[in-house]
Image (cartoon, rainbow, N blue to C red; front, side):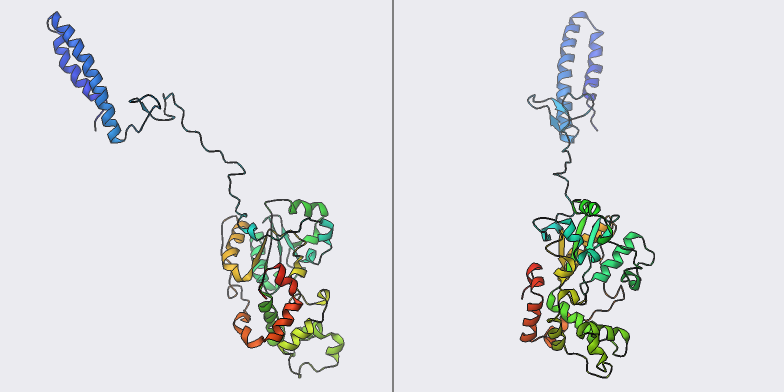
Length: 349
């Protein structure tokens, strides 16, 4: 490898002999040594540029090598671009494209909503989540308990037991605490909804189509559909199950407040339009959006959303049976019953 001082060393070696000779030759020797020095430096610089040793030059001074910020350089290195709140990307920004928020937030009104009993709050995970039955809410409860540190997080019977779950709910907080979390940009307020047609059918299949008619659970659901007086007057164990048409007809006569949570309107359950949601996802797009939420909760450690098989909670297969159960009359009645869900959650009629 060529060294910048090599040429000068060779010239000096030759001219030293001339200096030891007669005096007239000394002047000639000094002249040639100076000229050789300049030529050697120029050659060193040229070769240095070609080899990549010298990459830049001082602005406005051609031919002078310069490395910004290097020791001895009189030209400062380019300053780093500072990271400011405006330049640091917020991982929640992409989710907030699907926000549904009221024009004004009334904390006292929020505390009085049915949603106040439902919304799960985790200061540790920086989330406020409203579970909607028949919209993968068991999967989310499992994940929240997992990241909260519960050893029995995989036990869904505990996750779905309000008293045993260990969850903190919105109604457990003071107005000041609620206000603080609602105004904190690092707290994700979210829920996942589902197409009302598919959710209604899934509910019917789960609670009436597949339950053991001799079991207490079936009896309770029948009472929530028809009333206890009706149940006491009928031998439900030996009578035909209600058809999907009968189920839809019956729930269409109920007030939202008296509906079972599995078929009550989603907007009613979670106060959509009154509670300031940063993100209202859709079950139909869960493969796209769930990983982003999970990354936020898990501080980037995980992004996998567990399947129904993984959480041992079988699917009703409602999406594959829509044509079998729906006709135009039923579809119209479901739309009328859940019109607020269709409009606010932006589902097609």
